[in-house]
Amino acid sequence: MHIMGEGKRGVRMDRSDLKRIIDVAAGREAADMCIKNCRIVDVFNKTVFESDLLIAAGVIAGFGGEGHKEAREVIEADGAYVAPGLIDGHVHIESSHVSPAEFSRLVVPHGTTTVVADPHEICNVCGLEGFDYMLKASEEIALSVFLQFPSCVPATPFEHSGAVLDAVKIAKRIDNPRVLGLGELMDFPGVCAADGEILDKLMVAQIAGKIVDGHSPGLNGYELDTYTASGVRNEHECATPQDLLDRVRRGVYVMLRQGSTCHDLLNLLPALNEANEHFCLFCTDDRQSASLLEEGHIDNNIRLAVSAGLDPVSAICMATINAASCFGLKDRGAVAPGRRADLIMFDDLKDIRVRDVWIEGVHVAHNGGYLAHDVHIEPQHVSGRMNVKDFSSERLKIHLNGRKVRTIKLLPFSVVTEAGVADVSANEQGCWIRDEQDIVKIAVIERHHATGCVGLGLLEGYGLKGGAIATSVAHDSHNIIAAGDIDTDMELAVRKLIEIGGGMVIVKDGVVLDFLSHEIAGLMTDRPGEEVARRIAEMDRTAREKLHINETADPFMTLCFMALPVIPALKITDNGLFDVESFKGVSLEMIE
Image (cartoon, rainbow, N blue to C red; front, side, top):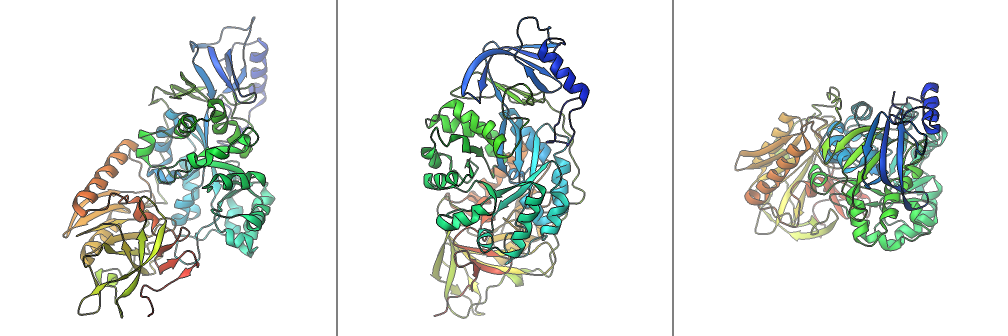
């Protein structure tokens, strides 16, 4: 039997396993495996030493020595480096567009053996059923997946999400040994105001002895004191070196994020020093399949940090023991007796390219190839989540009394927007029509409860001409979001999404040019990551070539973040335009 600890499946080591590990360490029994002549990265002393490595029952038994019996399996390292398996401190698996089993296949060959995942996205669509799916779908896979229970479903009270997860519902799942705590606490205004519902959620975590993940971009001074005093343990939304220093000063672990969209790692590195390094770790947050295939996962964070001047052993510590310490994962994060045999092997300390990966002593990857045989779970209770009512092109008409309007103004290569102002055109019926300006219609259609809600706005700087794009991946409530300049094309795109159960659609001149279905909650698919990456790349090219999307915007990723009402400055929900800075809904038309 391999030891799972209380981490992966809640199975504890039994007495016979413990005796065997001790006997192997003492030389009385032969190890299951011995990795000979390796250079071991010591994350405790921050050094490298040469030794053999003995593994028994999925655990590191010791470093061997004279008189030890020959192991059942001997692996000759020939001087290669062996380090602990890598840990991602904060990730939304849903953002990869693939299922947990497929996500494991993509990241494990890059050396990631453990992730702390926040299923915030699928829970906003499916509630507890989404959470239970992520637990079950990540149960019988090689990757060790811990979950944080989403703290903000819905993300704000100003939109319709698929569920409401209050303190009572959190309490039903938080005692699960694979649930480490409360997910990113995005409602920092509610925390600072000691909001009653927030206090209830914090108390559930405290009573269960679980940690609380932070999310407080831009917070400082006494407000940061207030937020941290609530029990927040870590933070992944730091943008500047001072943000990092301010949080470490308050005993908060800081994650240096390198995702597909948000790149904070290099900005934060200047704040690291010998005194605070142990409070820093890595995360990816949101990383698409294409990024995982082309650049890697946490190994990419390490290479990027080392290339910018960080000591390689320090970078490995951040990716292993620091992350384990942050989350109280005492059974992993180091190559040491008694720890899980989650190991990676590579040849160059300054340019880590993972060659072999073991999880609990089982060889699961070699030279980029995945050796594990995972169980893929059918999404029985989280598919077909497209409950749309009373939708037609008539619901997309923008009736104007005047001509001066607010626009969601895109910034180049960013999901942050400006609150723009424009004078636009209207037809004889007083409805908005496209003119020579780079302004198109944007709509959010509620898809969870058949409310019939449709929020309308105008998007500036997207570049779209003559058609429509729609997707059911629309952070954080994941209603349908569509952009276009022809109402009938927008309607067709939305109807196609409903037909396929969610995903991504491109329409031009009344014809569906391309689509990719996401059968798991409209967020993910169980197709191979390579296929998903290829198809999304093809759709991006089609969107640029046929619909002329600007090079400074990602056709789908930019669009899906336009529905996120917690990132400045102006966004859109199914209830209409939302001013993030004043945190309230606003009208499309400007009052003269």
